[in-house]
Amino acid sequence: MGQDKVKELFFENPSKQFYLRQIAKLTKVPKSTVARILNQLLSDSIIVREKSEPFDKYRANTEDSLYKFHKKQFMLEKIYQSGLIDYIVEHAHPKTVILFGSCAKGEYDEKSDIDIFIESSETGMNFDKFKLKHAINPYFAKNIMEISKELRQNIINGSILHGMLKIWQK
Image 1 (cartoon, rainbow, N blue to C red):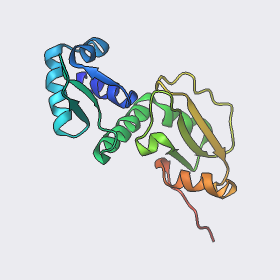
Image 2 (cartoon, helix red, strand yellow):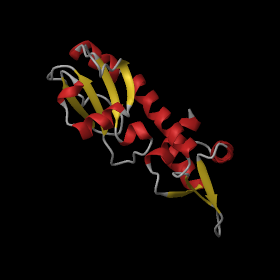
Image 3 (cartoon, rainbow, N blue to C red):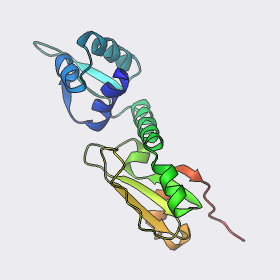
């Protein structure tokens, strides 16, 4: 639980630096626990430590591919746990649901939205009830081939959350 809170702080604020005490205060996790978590995140290359006086600063290791991988996995877990995918499947009956854009690349920040392609007719779904700290930006289309080439390429490079993507049809 504490580790998720600390990870989320760095994932949601990739351009900010934090002191150990500041992290403990913001996450409401005891300082000793935060210190242990920071050491683990350092060894996993998720964060980097910058020596400074009087205290060291910690920041996200945004250039590291492992950081982006963990950040993407963290977002995927939040999306599934929120019930968003079940809600979309139940109300839109899509062939495919795909996360794309900055969230799918592990490059999102606190201002990013969650781009989701839903291969289905548009429905009057309300996404406000999902507490993911990001606005949900759905893109509906009955067939992915109806979408512009640039957007389609971005979607294809995303992460499939439900169903499967059929690009070539007889």
